[in-house]
Length: 281
Image (cartoon, rainbow, N blue to C red; front, side):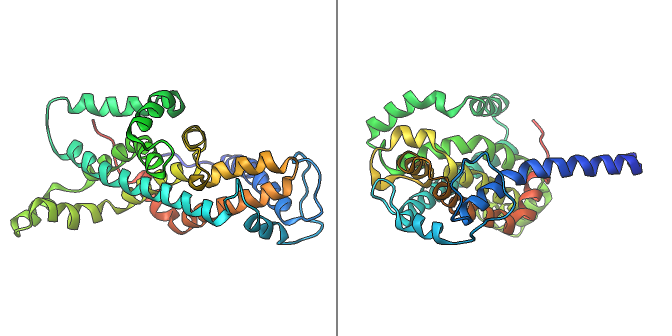
């Protein structure tokens, strides 16, 4: 690949800096509204630093309840739903991906493209059939119902990403384990899965993030206050707080903090999982 000259390097740095400004500016605006106790303006106003720095708003978020449910309960519900959907999507996706990567069976190619085609349909378009199915099963207002729905949404990406990772694992490694007496299950768990760890981490993180931040389907299905998640609680805070932008900013920061912390801790592995595999059909 031809290397960029000095002007090309400068242009690339300028473009990256411009993109960085557009990405960071909204987060910075959110931060100064959350830490500035004196800010009472509209969110279109931009300031570099808070006038009255304070953590008071974060205490208000912890003390104030959304629909009578405290923030800690909302966080627990969200972690249960997001974590459960990530684990279930990982378990189902890994087995499906390995079958698509290593086995040959009729309809394999059609099944892959059907799986991908299903992911192109917006989940909100399926709200009516999902509503009816969950109602019949008695899961509509439960956290288990949300876990099932979010698992189905996360499966296509997980299967495609893990399939590429499993294809990159040399068959010779699995054959050597089989010659040493390892069965299929032991080879899969002890050999194949560890070698595909970056892709597994990426699939789990994407599934977790989807369940953590999803709002529309949860709002349609859940009408029990004790099963409300953080995203739904933020909407309740908006409707109840009116123009209290400071409170909403502090709530949003506290909601984003766990996901951002996990991403920062795992960013190298996530990037490796995204770029390490190859896609062969």
